[in-house]
Length: 269
Image (cartoon, rainbow, N blue to C red):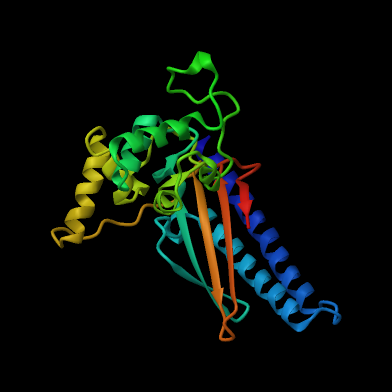
């Protein structure tokens, strides 16, 4: 049964790949043949945008590929050649971040304290995040989030009372709304996140100690973590041209592991 399921997913992934490539090629050709009435700058921007979109799609295909052909998902940059351009692409697994809709106030307080806030300020800000946008009186002493009070994006954090631009700038790379778990997967976390769980999670402690020993040259770097089905990933693609044009795309997807719908797209901007 497992083998049949894997073959089914592989077949669907191959068909998905063919469909995506057809869309990529069609989009680029359509833009190349765009109406001459478009201004040259607008047409160039549209064409470059299609190229970057193509690089994102090719990256998704790589994530769907068999294990040996998959990309690193720890944010390491890679280069994707497409349509005569070199696009810089990185993929980051969201499982290593703190989910704003699942994490508790105690963990958030440790996070904000680690970023420089004093204990009372860190506690108040953590409570404001957990209570956002409001909490009913019956939930006043609960550590669970109230119904409907979900962050739709990490950017929403800027709306929380007490959040400063500096704390947001430093905290946002460590946060997500896509992991859907109250815990982290240490295999995909950064040292800053792992440090928050060092005293309570043996796996986080071991992962952090390994990273520290690698940086000190005491042990060889561990292999990059692979792609896990069911996880969400942020793909960032950037293209810079000799004319100083810069196009950036950010896509957030989830690989479901389901043959009928192997991919969910949460964001593409």
